[in-house]
Image (cartoon, rainbow, N blue to C red):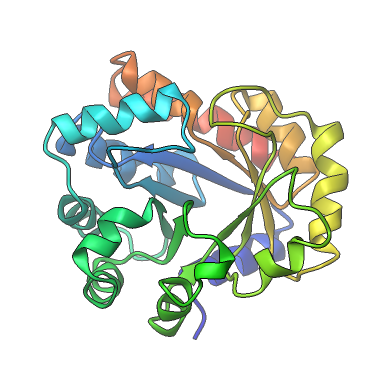
Length: 264
């Protein structure tokens, strides 16, 4: 069965366009504002929505995303409410893919089978679970694929040629290439460094390769998308929400980033 993610990439390929993916922490600064932003993302040019699942100990995230998670948790956000938010989004949009990005602990606590059933029913299309390595595929990755959810894996500058086949083994939807070593929102991505790495991954898989971390301007979005199948922006958007900017202003910024990626 073709997932919404597969369908989106097929459509983009047919149009000769790159993908723009935006990350938003579910429930930041609160449920209602967060839902309003998420509902506005497709109109601002977002092709795929990455929805952050708030967690108390987000080890891969930099200060910007960590604080967003704390704001969301402080506002009462839970795994259930994150799924409720996705379900509310699906009432008016049945085509834009949603990838749930987070950590394994909340999923494990809920129970994998119950979580997969609920996530599928809520309209989630894929999962990025940053603290489950390929060695743990039987935990969640393989059950998720069986349930019809894409399981998207991260590759990094330290993923060497020996490790790469393992990372790609049960991946579907797309590969998320982390452009820099370290945490989110830290350094800036450079297309000259990213291009050869994307080419190396693409030589080993037919999946689209999307690049994230360190992309914070429309120019950077365009530069990175030009050497990959698309660009992801998270911290730069979350910073606008943290600064208290209104929904229209946040979405206007997202549109500039999306236009950058689409111009690649």
